[in-house]
Length: 480
Image 1 (cartoon, rainbow, N blue to C red):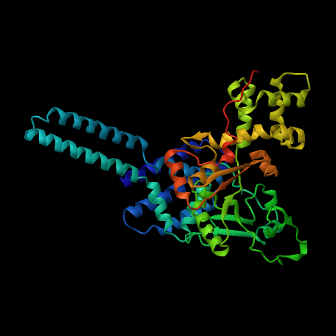
Image 2 (image 1 turned 60 degrees about the vertical axis):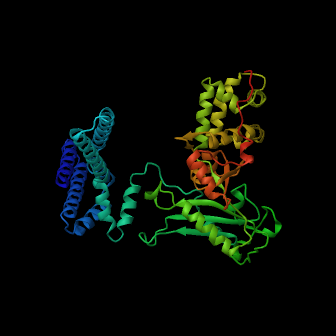
Image 3 (image 1 turned 120 degrees about the vertical axis):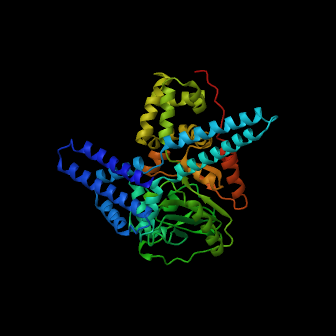
């Protein structure tokens, strides 16, 4: 079976090579040749592994060749892995079909002969049971025989082999990696490591000196509602018992003594996966729980643990909803704005002239450019409509029963409570263009974390505080 798979891999390589020869460019020819070399090395690794021979030399050559290859070559090799080394879905489906058909026949046969069981009947039933067992073993074999796992298992044995797999996985990413609140300078880094700040790193022995997840924490008197107060060039003073901040002279360094008295909240304001290849593998949950224990050992009086999280893709969702309203969707319009709010927007934009339908193109342009925030009156007019729409997006919009928003899904699955929605909490360019300035506090109540996680994963219900639920409304009345 392995031999046939290896041959299939070579055929797949030949197919790509033959299609590539139609190109006359030297780079394409080189890319195809290198791709063929990678495929050949992978074939050799699997063959040697099957024959219980040591494939380490080919593994190291494969890794080195991949690292030095261009994007086109890497793409060809990744296609080879996906097409030629993966589980055959057709084979798995056929086995499942045969298994189910045999099971149905067995049940039907047994039912009809239940009253008249004799030797022949017993033999038939035993044969059918054996056939079911055979089909089940075939299915398990078809699922487990994916040579991707065997290839990666061999690579992971090498020193830095896991790092290679992570790097290869990062080549499959479509979007560019970006931190939640990217650091802009060494001064920014210094502030994040200064007084009333903590930085925790999650690492693994398979990736030495390579942080997997980085968590930034701010220690504050209460749960913060704005990221500006956290990442600006200041240091909090807990004794003030509010979110006021006292500025430090630039040349004073970190010569500030932390006051534990008055500190009551730990704000997780930036959770960053530093390995693009681990995108989609959620490690933040492990880190958050460890961090809570560490912080409580250092500050026993801390009682509130909360995130200050962005609402990624809310702006895109909002523009899509507005486009639907412009196209005549009155249901979405009524859930967005009331008659009074719509008339107020019309009056603000056009006075007594024009139609309410002209509002949406104008508003979409301002949302896209983030210029609406420069108009104080318009900002006030949009406050309640946008808060309602954002709460609806976070709480009601689902994918397969779970929260559509990735951050809401992550923290709800970890057992956090969607505690508070914050208006104009992130006025940075990224915050405005991605989340319309919105941020959310997902609060971790340690005694109910497991219960909340179970409610979300099993019942598909997001545990939500009344501060957010008050913005979840039924369609507003409208006569327009």
